[in-house]
Image (cartoon, rainbow, N blue to C red; front, side, top):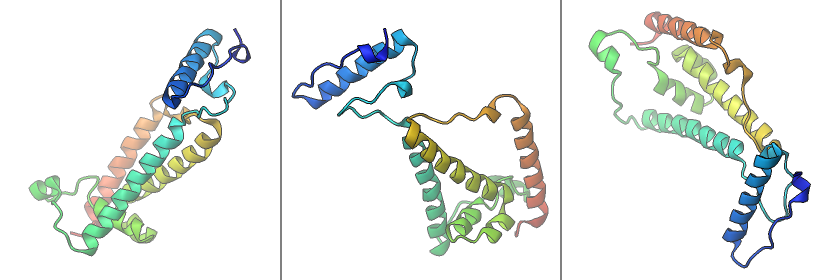
Length: 176
């Protein structure tokens, strides 16, 4: 059965029932035709959920919230908990300086953010770019982006090496 052959049910007075009926019809169509929901034509009055764009907006909002929280905490000199590893061993953890890094990013002071914790700075900027790309790509296709580089183990080794190099950098360059 082709997606064009299925007719949506007539819209009842209850809008919620219409949306549920349309979703059930779409699910049946996808199951029988092998097509994905993104390949089906849009029906008038029935919005297609865009999980990719919603997820990207929530994640980007979380990142911006962390930056704002760090900026407020440092601006108003709120007491912050010390790093447990540094308190016990006087050695920085791989993420020491992250609060100051997020505060510097909130001020758009990229040089200071990079100096305080390069891995967190690059990671936060890369995450923001990826999330913006997810919004841009997800908004016009109605689906999430999938990264082909996450298949395999090479990226895990690169991440572990970046974490180790960042830790060495912090060991010698992080202000005490």
